[in-house]
Length: 224
Image (tube, rainbow, N blue to C red; front, side, top):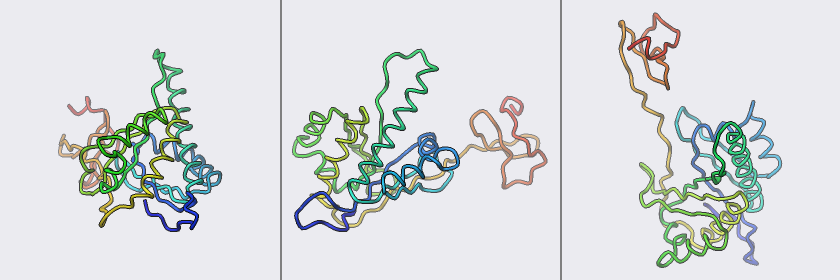
């Protein structure tokens, strides 16, 4: 998080950048059909919401703006994920609703402040918001950032994000931060009949680096 402007009265009216780590399916939910959902989120929250490019199983969603805009954007994302959970449960025999889960990407130098002495700060956050908060012990690959996972109701998540923002403003990152950049999935390649195929789910897709005589995706069992 990079506070760009701090009001002299010490209020929380500052500009922040928060990074979220999401799976492809979650990103698809945020983008919506033809980008309509993310467009609505940007317009209604006033926050800038950018989604990293790339054919990766994980993507980075960057939310920038004044704190009130960030909280609105977080609320919209949390409620959208809750809606997805409810929709998925209508086709499932499960009776208890799983919590909404968001993963923040935080510079490792700020994680100590989030945890607090002997875990006091993170315990206080859990008790006062009702959200589950976990700070990963290891840094994300090739970076100096760690994942902070928040689970609970959308209301609990929003309260928890507010508290995390306060802590991070009070304890800016120390030194240079190497941001986490998700790597594209390395898909296995198999050869059959002189043609290379990459595996995507249960399908074998002709590999683009090898001239294809068979442009049609084949079910794996057709090859094996």
